Length: 173
Image (cartoon, rainbow, N blue to C red; front, side, top):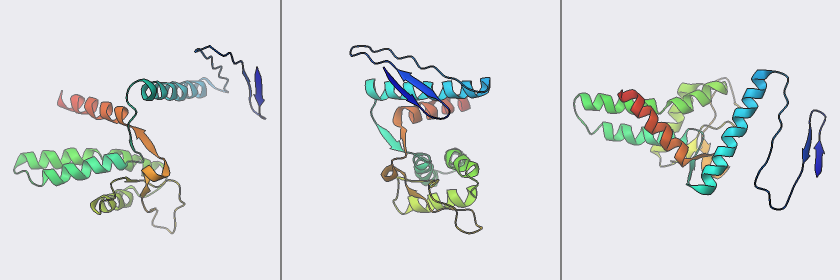
């Protein structure tokens, strides 16, 4: 067995050569913290299971995939006429929610961040997403977008596919 410890935690790992079962014991100050830890571990385990058994494709994260979808849908929407054009453009705007929330949660100007992402994607930089790694310069609360794929900020393809599919189904009912 291996014992790893820090000032706050002590972890005991018992390893056997042929076991495929693991137990994780969580300890936290509040039930809410424990619920959040459990959810985070469950998400990570499910992602690993999905990647190793099903689909191994990833998309650039940080809102890059969503802005690219919004950009392409808006381009297509401008070629349609009538009420369909309005619906297509509004549907494209719905995909802005992920980069907008990322920017707001980071204390950035969501309008400026989304505008900068659209400008980057219009130049063909389709893997550029919200840059949360760099510090804000000046009072305008905007950070230049960065290449999320090159920075290793990735989202699982299957997760995005299901999210979009379920959102569309919910909107159509």
